Length: 190
Image (cartoon, rainbow, N blue to C red; front, side):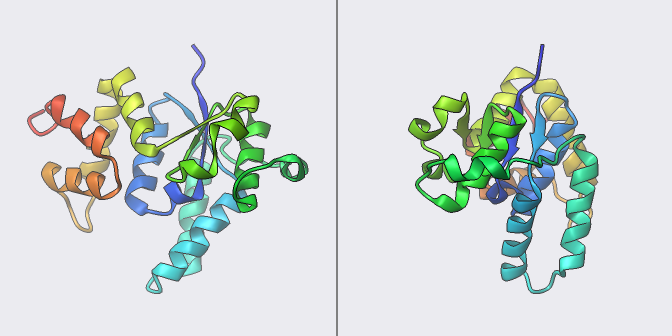
């Protein structure tokens, strides 16, 4: 069974808790994560605007760890596709171009309106909210996903988080369905 190839948009790589969750879930082997240098630059630039306490060097280290963590994650040689793509926001064309080039079936993004089905279905690609994406992963393989979530949570040191507090973090990331699925699977008592 082949696993889906997914493009992770900059908006889902921007928040550290969601980025960490996605990087841990890629280790389940349930999907292949892809992005571009342009996507990396976008989330780094936006984090630096909001977090003056962080340096570009720190975020580039995170980027480099991501690039080495998710095997074959960087998409290149997609730029020639950009001019022929029509999206509501032309600044998002590079994301769809990378999805086309990498033969991705999904774009994981909070910005669903920027990737309307009418514009992307011709490429066999769908945009999906991160909550729906991680919930689907969980429903398809609860034990694998639960193990990665718990490994991530138990490894947090600054600050350490109880399971209840970690679920609150997931809700803050707009992962309400995923949080509910974890609760229904007795995450708090396993």
